[in-house]
Image (cartoon, rainbow, N blue to C red; front, side, top):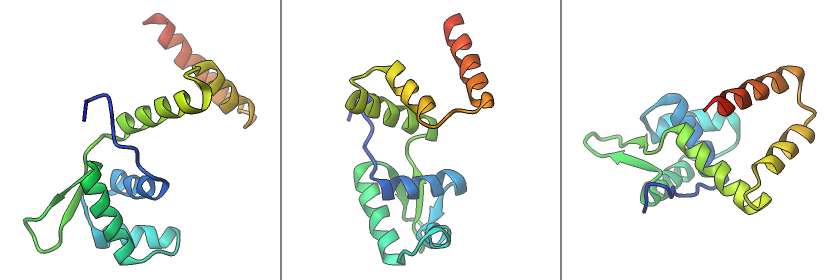
Length: 127
């Protein structure tokens, strides 16, 4: 797999990734405990997803202790960038301005959001 191509996580895998980004390296039990507070799920379901995610290259598994510890492979920001790039290509034909227009227009962006976006655009323009 090239550096530019990251594995595409499913919705459930993204939910597990968010837990791992929050907690850091964790056992299945630790991930399960967080997820069960958010929605109904089973321990073996979380285990199976983590095994699949390990096979896909989304997480690594440390088997040196009795309880295996799962760790994120790709930083949150890198994964988010890859997901947005893929989404922009698929849904907007690669058009960043259409993506932003829909994101801001459809949700009635607050003044705070618009100010933050302007600041980002100004920073990008300076580069």
